[in-house]
Each structure stands twice: as structure tokens, then as C-alpha cells.
Length: 415
Image (cartoon, rainbow, N blue to C red):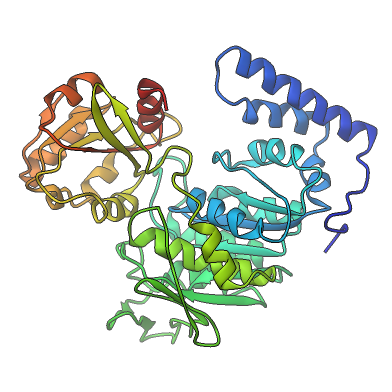
């Protein structure tokens, strides 16, 4: 690895100027009430020094985390685990493109580890700039159809970008697209964490043939591409390590998907010398991640805030909400950060919400209403969050929203 972790070389005058200017731009943005300022700050800094990301990463042991779902949570769990060995800098709030990552690292000059969430489109470039010691690849499924490449093309891009990488790649053995992407790397640690959403992985990424999926296994009968043997695995409420030892997962975060995130995080922590028991114990501290899973009080009601951005994410979220008759508020927008194409709503099995009283809000509430009508689910369309909460029957409310809708809700409830 370039640089000496924990022993930063002094930044050049140009890099120092870029960092200072970026922090100033971020402060102005915050003062104007335009969010955290991390993205504009990073953009200003990179304009002044295009190589700044690499310079800021050179003294860090870096791990990159990329996926369609679970990036932010897994990044947070890994960061908690690695804090057992030293200070960590991380883009914990999810600003995961180069500008946001640069902003985050600018605040970590005394850190030993950099735990970085990376948007799928930027993974190869950020890996080139930061010389990571480890890269965690969790899953790939359709998302932001107007912006992102088709998943097979994205897997191909990752495969090319990771070819010959010196990083240890920690990859999900149960997702054929992830296996295809990681297979060009010389050093892969395979983790079996399951794949609930399979609709983007029925054809072989290698030859285009049909994948056979007996039980949890998968293989291509035409070219022989198949599921690799994992060295780590999620088994119920335990992580199995390469020696066959079972370590209990105790999380405050709900759902099976977060156990899968914890299993991957334990495998990543082991690359940095943190034992599974220590890593998993530290993950218990995490109660919420950038507002996700928070329970908030609003209008004398309790709302649990859940984020679901694409079909795979909605499927996982349905599995962790409380059973009927728990009231559910659904909110969908289609702004730039969400992707403006809402055709993905038709890929989500909303029939699984049968029996729940459902209130629908958000910019695209009518798109969602049509989808629920076809699914044969009862619902009410409301104009505002306040109206939806007032309509909800008694009990804690589960609120599921996509990206900008989730931010709207957080602002309204003061979270």
C-alpha cells in the first residue's frame, strides 16, 4: 500500500488550500440551510486539487463498501468494528460520490482507517484513487433505471475495474452478479449471506445461459459458472468463521438483511485483524443509521422510519415490519436523487402488505396508488404526512419511504 497508515505525510500547500476552501464552502452551504455541505465542499476542493482524494487517503488503511442495498448500514457497522483498533474516518451520512468522499476524508487527518461507502458507478475510480486494503461487495439489483446501467453492465464494469486489484475483496457468494464482478480479483473472501431478491439474477453473467437454482446453490449448466464455496456464512443468528466457529450476532437494527450486513462486516474486520467476537460486540452499539430505523414521536404518535429505494430494498423492508394490523405509511418521490422513472413500482410485491391499514403520500403518491389498486390492497391517498398520521389507526406506525421522500419525512418530524 502507498503511504504509511497512521503516519500521514504532510499535505502540499495546494492540497491544504483545497481542503480549507472546501471546508469554507461547506460552512457557507450549512449556514444557508442547504444540508451538510459535504458535496459542495468536496467539489470545490477537487476543483483546486484534482488528486486530493488520493492524497487524503494515502495514510489510511481503506475499506470501500459498494452495493445496491445496505451500503450505508454496512459502512457504519464496519466503522464501529474497526474502532476497536484505532480511529476511523467515514462518510457515515452516505455522501458516496467522489466529492462527498473527499469531504469526509478531509476531516480524518489523524485517523488510521478510512471506511468509505461508494456509489456503484464510481467504485472503480475511487478504488484507483484510494488504494484500498479491502473492498466489500454486497449485492447488485436494479435501481434508478434512468441513471444506472443495467445490472449486468455494472457487474462487468466492476469486473474490469477490480481486475488485478491488490485489495482483499469480501464478496457475497449468493449473488451471481457479485461473484462475476469479484472473480477477476486475485484475492477474494466469499461470504454466504443469502439473496432474497433473485429477479435480477436468473441469467448467467458469464455466458447469458439460464442459471439453475437448486436450494441455496446456483450454477450455469451451459458454461459451468457456479457459486463459489464460502469461507464465512450467516447461519440464523450466528456468523460462521473460516474455522467453523459460530459467533452470535446481537444487533439493535431489525431484520435479516442487517444480520447479513453484520456477517459481511465481521469478515471485513477480520482482514484488519479485529476478531469476530470483538467486531460483533461493537456492532451492537449501532441503533440507527442516518435516521434509518429511528423511532420518532410526531403528533403524539410513534413512527418507525424505514428507507427502501428499489424492489430488493422494499422486499427486505416488508419482512421486518410488525404484522397487521400495524398501520403503514408509504411515501415515494421521483426526484433526481431517486431516479425519475417509477416503473420499478411494478416489480415490488405490494400484496405482502395485505391486512395493514395503508396511507400513501409523496410526490408520486398517485403512481403508487395505481400499483396498490392493481395489487388489491386497501389504501388511502393523503396530501401530507400530518394527514396520513391523523388517519392512521392506533399503534406504532411503520413509515417506508424512498430516498428524497425519507429526507422530507425526517425534516418534517425534526429528525
